[in-house]
Length: 455
Ligand code: TYD
Ligand code: MG
Image (spheres, rainbow, N blue to C red):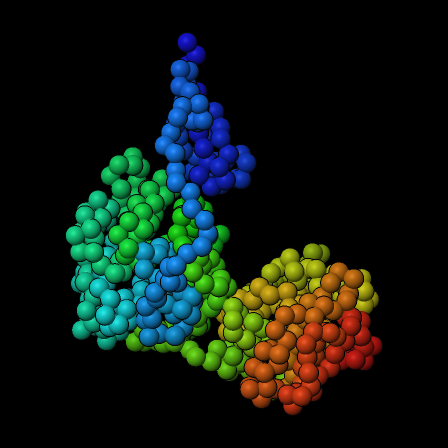
């Protein structure tokens, strides 16, 4: 009889191997290969399709059910990111770097939901009860009706939650949970996966919402397998730069609302404060127009947000010039530099290029291409852009400018903040009737000619 073949599967990319190794040959991740039961259950066992199972009842798509009732926390920035409030029986994962403020955010959220009348249980696997209570005191939440426990045993936690039947359970963090039916240390891929699965199942079974905290790895992903992100209904990232007080809660997946929505907070001595007008905040450090600065009228989720791009260009002392980017995609910067060189004849060889988004914001919209190009050109020519001007538009490889979505909203927000001119692509639904001066162009070369006098 043939020996049963062992099956080792990478928990990160799903590749299967016949023997264990420390590093997955396929995706290069370390310590992600675990033994799993072989897929074909060995000789003598029939495939699933061969033996009869239970026949399921099928239904059509029509429904009389009302959309899920949501509970608002009373904190607008949080409700918006959740898609309009907390949905019962939903599982939410909140990821972020250590020390960014996840525990602070969730303790404040726990108190906010408890004050709306939800029964809230907060379970900390990282801090002692006394520490959590001290934080609550500092945040002025000590009289909020939140029930607290410190525990890491998932079995005890599930038993307690089963008995208490809370409307919302907060687990801080998923990496500290220990499922005793899995033979590996807390924080390992198998433990994180099992714990997330148990908690998500609990949410669906009992109708409690569960919010789990997840730490992120150096690469910026929630530690543990990607499957955790697939298991839950909503994935939020809490991000920000350590040196800045701004914190952004961003939804990257939401089964109950739009993704890519952001909520903006400010970390103060007494916890997180919501920021209702992020544009004013992100532009607050801006002085008089300076070379290398361009204000981008962006859209984050359903909301227009103005941010400042800053560029610095200097002759490079090295044979390989530096390209350094904070808050924007490095690959996209390389593309814009290449288009400027190939289509407008403006070389950046031998020059170090630094690009930064002010305020610790991260921008992912291609609509920011033109603002990036404007900041780069302004820095290179050492000449400031016209005052009170916003810029937006996508750049194609041919050097053509493409109109972007929600032009009206971008212009309205810019006008609200005192900007008087916008530089944008031709087309789109721009109307000058809003009291904004519009400078529309069809390609990057025209932009260079118009703003920087032929380049
Ligand atoms: P914390 O919520 O513990 O972060 P995480 O759970 O993501 O690891 O917050 C840690 C930081 O927040 C810490 O460096 C101190 C700061 N902080 C404030 O600035 N103000 C406050 O009111 C609180 C509670 C924390
Ligand atoms: Mg914490």
